[in-house]
Image (cartoon, rainbow, N blue to C red):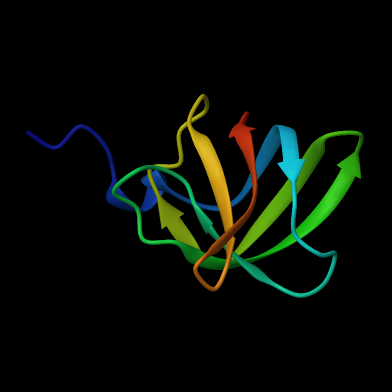
Length: 85
């Protein structure tokens, strides 16, 4: 049974809240949106305070509010935040 179109399950951007950032301020990073998700290249822009807007180079499957987005620079964790939308 097909409950919806697969294409609708992909998103190009996400907003993360309560972001903790330990990395430097430059360049693109990788973002992992759930445990079994392969981290994907993205660009990020601060929205103010501890809120971060993330735009992926390619749409990602099943981004879910309430999950933790983890940001990597190569294999080092440089930040994280809770997915809100």
